[in-house]
Amino acid sequence: MVFPPPFLRETLPSYGYRIAQISGVNSLRELAYLFDLDLPAFLKGDPLSLEGFASYVGHSSRVLAQGSVNAESIHRLQVGPNKQNEVRCSTGSYRFCPKCVEGLETDDHRSFCLGRTEWLVDAVHVCPIHCVRLMTATPEKTGRVQADLSLLIPKMVAALTAATPPTAEPTTLERYIIGRLDGTATHGWIDNLQLDVVIHTAEVFGAMELRGQHSSWSDIGSEERRQHGAAGADVLIEGPSAIMEFLKKHIGMGARGDDYHATFGNAFSHFYARRLNVVYHPVCAILARYVGANFRFTGQEMVFGIRTMGKRPTTLRSLCEQHNVGMKITAQVLEAQYGIRAGSSTVVDPQLIDEIAPQLKGLMNSRDAARDLGVGVELLKGLVDAELLVPDFRFNDRMLGFKRDTLDAFKMEWCEGVEREAGIRFSSKTPIYVASCAYGIRVPQLLIAIREHGIDLYRGGATRELRHMKIRNMDLWEMMRSINAG
Ligand SMILES: [Zn+2]
Image (tube, rainbow, N blue to C red):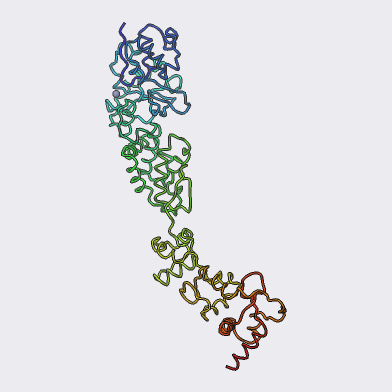
C-alpha cells in the first residue's frame, strides 16, 4: 500500500493520525500498539521508532523527523529535531491556515485536519505561503500537542465558512521562525540562540523601540506584540554589532546616573530574571558588554549575571585612588599648574592625572610629615622657612609635599644623636625644646646655631624624634655666651 507523504511541516502526531485513519485503525495510539511503538518516544522523534514507521509508510525517516514534537518540558515545546527550536505554544487553542486546509480531500474532513509545526508557535500569526491570518479553533481537550485533531474538524469547518481570512504579510520574525523550522535559516549569530529566546528578545527589543522602556508595557496586545517582534527581529538578525548600535540609540549612556537597572526600565527584569538561564547567556553577554562600555562602576559588578568591568570612573577622587596619590595635593597641583579647580567628585581628564601622578606619588603633606618627625605643623613650617628641611614639592605656602627619603635624611641628620656617654649624668643635658624656651630662641634657629658651633646632640628617647633630642648644658652655655657676645 502506498501512503501519502507528510504535508509541508506536518507534525508527527498529525501525520501518524492520518496514517492510522488510512490504515483503518481509529487512533494513533492503536496504530502504535499494533507496531509495538513507544508512542511518546515516537512523537519525540526517537530514531528507532521512526525507522520502523518510515519503512511502513515508505517515506524517509529524516523527513518524518521534521515533524517531531517534544513536550517533555512543561514550559516549552521542542519542534523538529533541532534541540535549539524550543518555543512557547498555547494549550487552549489550535491555529490553522484556512487556505492550507481548504480543498484538501474535502470529501473526508478527517484527512485534511492536519497539524503543522509552525502553527504551534505562538509568535506565528500568518501563513507564509498564503499570506493570510491563521484562524483559531478551540480543541475539546487542552494540550500543547493534539494527537487526535478529528474533534476539531467541525470547528475548523465552521471557522472556514464564517469569514474570508484577512490577508497579512508575514513579518521578519515569522519568516525567520519558518526558516528555523525548515533548517534553512543562515543568519549567523542569531541561529545559535534558542528559538524561544529569539522570539522573546525580539519582542522586548521591539517594545523598547516602539513603546519606550519607561512607558507602561502592561497593556500590550497580541497584535502589538507581533509588531514588536518584527521590529526586534530586524535588529537581532543583524547580529551583535547591530544590537550594540540599537542599545546606544534606545538605552543611551546611563542618563539616570549610572544605574543600569533604571535605564533599562521595563526591559531590565526580562533579562535579569533569566540571567542564570544558560540559553539567555548570549543575549545577556551582549547587554553586559554594552553596560560595561557605557556605564560607570566603581569596581567589579555582575551585570545581567556576567562579571563586567564598568567604564573607568574619572572623578578626581577615583583617579587619585587608582594612582594612589593624595587627593588634596593633586587638586592643588591642578589648580596651580593648569588653573583647574576640582573637587573630589569633579570629572577630570584622566590623561592629566596620568601626567602629574608620578611626581606626586609617595608625597606626604605637611601634617603627615610633621607627624612622622614628631613635631607640630608650625615647627615643621619653621624648619622649612629656615631651610633645614627642604620640601620635595612646594605648591604654595600651605601645601608642601615631602618624600619619605627627605624626612629620613632629616632625622639622620638631627635626631640620630650621640650615644649616652658614661660619666655624664642625665641631668646635665637639656632638651632642645626647653633650651629654646629658656633662651627665647626658636628651635630652627637653635638647630642652626648648634650646627655652626659643631655641637653634638644626644638622644633621650627610643624613637628618632626632635623632641627627644638633648644638648649638654656646658655646650649650651658656651654657645649662648658666644652668640650673645657676637
Ligand atoms: Zn496557508
